[in-house]
Image (cartoon, rainbow, N blue to C red):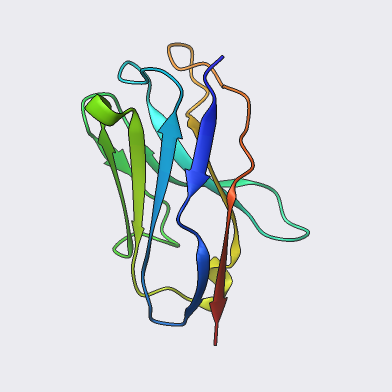
Length: 117
């Protein structure tokens, strides 16, 4: 199992930006990775996905505002979040996309993002 540590969350006003980082304990270059979020009382949802060759995918709720990237040399995946909205408030996690070639790893602690209106 790969250990995943998320960081970079915080309190920001609506319209602001944050950059989240997810550092893995060993190489994740062969995995498709994703950023997920879970708001209180809601299910965890995918907000960004990046394949091992750098192709990205976003749901409509964050498309054009969030950008996922990866630095395989640093075993790190990033999530740049711009134009933040109060509804983006959640705990953010990273993990693989759970597909056959990118099996799910143990979830980390996540990082809290709070957007004030």
